[in-house]
Length: 388
Ligand code: NDP
Ligand code: MG
Image (tube, rainbow, N blue to C red; front, side, top):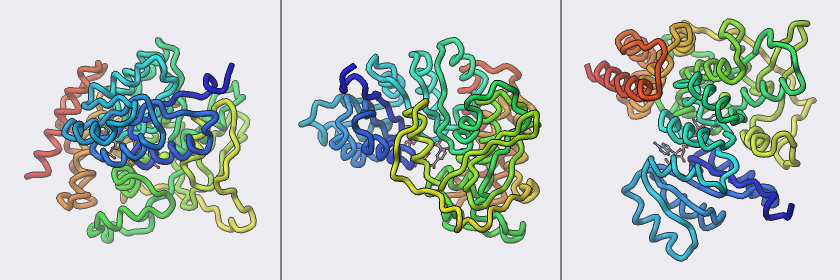
């Protein structure tokens, strides 16, 4: 195999975001191993154009069609195909040249292109956890049918994945660690008045706005419980959320003999991104290393689902099954945005999600079309509750 052929051709859905730009850092560090084949964004066409000029992908997609002309003009002198619109996302991932798809776009919008990639037989590096939350059962079935592996990028799930390497015995328990977010020590009264700016200051991770708000409400951890259930085939009763504010232990697995295997490291998303790209190999990196003699306090505490009701709501959605997680995800996308824009109070987010879950049509065994409808219905309901 010559050098050219050995470079893995990667499509990055959401290359302008937090995960997307870090994925490009990884590719830039290993130009002999990886190549960005496709880059996509929603609205930030200038950044997408800059990335395209630097990484020279075969194609770029701007999901928001209004920016097609500007993006095309910016790239007119380069041999790069420019597409626009959500359907184009589903088409570019199917290109025969693409060897892996990193799903780094945010929200329900990730579902359709992920399904298109799986149907085309492309291995998935999964960052877009909403896809697994909404339709984990469907995604797993499609992956089985098309023999497509999912490599987790979410740091906790990557840690669990790494802890399972070489194991043949069942999981007794997953220990899913959580930083607790910026409001870990806040009382309920204090939570009444927290602002978006306060929620956006995450103590350990620099992430996109949506997941940062989800981390503050702990809905992110609830979603990760659902993601873990589908990725590792473990019932929710065997998934224990443990608050670990230092984010050094990225998660752990306990086995039948009581042994626990964990993966540790400095909090840096480039580590799980790079591993998803290079697995089963590990490549050298210059990312930070743990300093064992300065880690004086690694602490662990139980989560408080009274103050952080979103975590309880995610478990409730899992318990109900069917399309309940899809409903919770859609309602959450509405309140998350509303909180960011100052139209919803922090604690009100859980109220709106709980009401939406009770009002939306329950479907025991949803199809893909059912998910689309449930998502739309739950968005309508959550929006109308907010506007009351
Ligand atoms: P960002 O908001 O930083 O980036 C999102 C990316 O998706 C951007 O490229 C954005 O384009 C694009 N995008 C947003 N909406 C759409 C849409 N409707 N159609 C097409 N593209 C869209 O998010 P993050 O990188 O933080 O998160 C991405 C995913 O990874 C999320 O699902 C998140 O839960 C998950 N994740 C993130 C982690 C992190 O550390 N950030 C950790 C673990 C998981 P544009 O720039 O034009 O808006
Ligand atoms: Mg995570």
